[in-house]
Amino acid sequence: MRGIWIHGQTNALEIPEAILFSRLAETIAWCSKVLAEKPQASMRSPEIQPRLLHDGIDDAVCEVGNRRSWRARENSHQPVETFPDLLEGRLMVYFPDATLTDGAAELESQGFFDGFNIPPWDTWVSYFDDQLPRTHAYSRYLLAYVPQPLLMDAERGMVTNVEACIQWLADADVKLRTRMTQWLA
Image 1 (tube, rainbow, N blue to C red):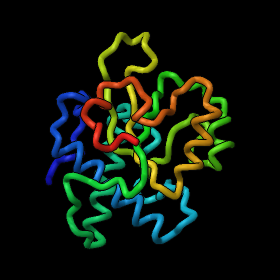
Image 2 (image 1 turned 180 degrees about the vertical axis):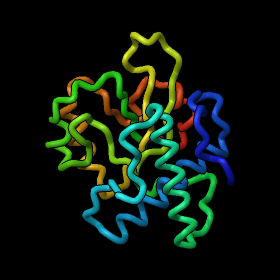
Image 3 (image 1 turned 60 degrees about the horizontal axis):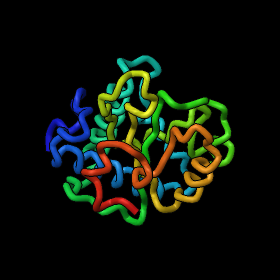
């Protein structure tokens, strides 16, 4: 599918299912490839690293997604399915406006999260804005996929994250959860 990494598709209830599921499938395929090649990978592949300066989180996520798609095509990977299997992984959300940036999650997760509590860019699926008042720190969020081999690291980071800016999608009070029920564990 062409154009799955277009900016501005941040409404969790309106993003077309084919685009959302294709983004998720591409992310899962990429993470699986990275872990198969380097089981101890940081999930921060330099070839898809976002630029330091960008036009916001949606721009950074779409940039990573476009680079990931381009790399997959370059390496002759088959197109991904549109109804992805999580391969025993889980979906999580990161709320950038709620982070305290204390470094505890980074330490406890063995570096899965960085010092700002951001999950690694290889795992980014999409960015959403539930259009709550800007004073609501849990309105905007990044959806990420956590591969099965990294679940324990992510869980350890989440447990120490007192502000709950990183949560499993199944536990998060976000609009996207109603669309993703088949993948909630």
